[in-house]
Image (tube, rainbow, N blue to C red; front, side, top):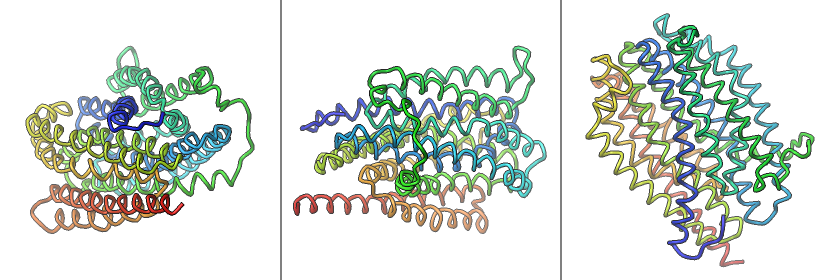
Length: 453
């Protein structure tokens, strides 16, 4: 990144950072998108099984991955403060932490996933597919988490186009392997939703291999000498990463897990409702890649400026990011409203599932404004390294307000499954308000500190 002096320069630099991040996030999401849509064309049971498996996996992966996102603001601030020599030890310690986390996840999942699936009121075939999908996915956990660290390092340097190219190279691999293992082509067994887990795991390892090669050979990264020295484990550095990363990870976990919890609670409904809900949530999640990408870009830009104590510039980047998010939200709302039938048909050919998915998609329109505010604001707060209050706010908004209200509406009114969607919307709206107030407060404090200095 470079220091800019005008709004026009900032907008240009922000867009240059954002567009590759957006393509990267969209490409990573497309793995899940193709897992879901291609499984849905195998059968409704495969779609429901992958839906349940994904609902268990996403909160875990995004929560742990969120902890590792602490690498981005730390490296961004080190770069802004011109402390290049401190980057390599930090990144290596983050890789050690990612490996340790992957081992813990695999061990815990081995004992808990069968119990969770057994307690759910699922049809036997749906339960079998969900378990098989998660089992295959487990082999890709180490590669996915280590790549998260390397990508955070790459992005923190402002080289977001490199992350984009890595992901784009891996996407065709995932699609091809899905085609082979889900539908049993080229002599492979027809595995349905379980095959989607195999495809994702292989793709994760491909992404990691490509990232290591580029960091080791490309001059803009090789000068940091990330892999030149094997450092001893530093618990002090782990503590630094976790102190910042745990609140980030749990804040993301609280947000993503509420969607997973709703899908799991919907297991009391029939397979068609589960499938339709997953189709609508999956598309809404794809649109969520835009505010999420803007959030990650804001973290990079704000972190860089905060590291250089240019708080006015940091505030301007926050405004640019939130403004862009609201513009995208307006466009996406119009698309959902006009083309809900076409969107739903991407996931299923079943007439009943198609009708239910269209119904849920209209509620997804209301997600857009809340996501366009709450998610970028969280990114700005991470750039300031202000994460603990955001953690509490997301916990209250999503789990104290959103999920309970959704459960009450779904259980004790005639709304049924729709009640959960209304609860989700309420939680997201409260989160947007809470976090916005916090960001304004933090920005004022920083300005006062600078004036006092």
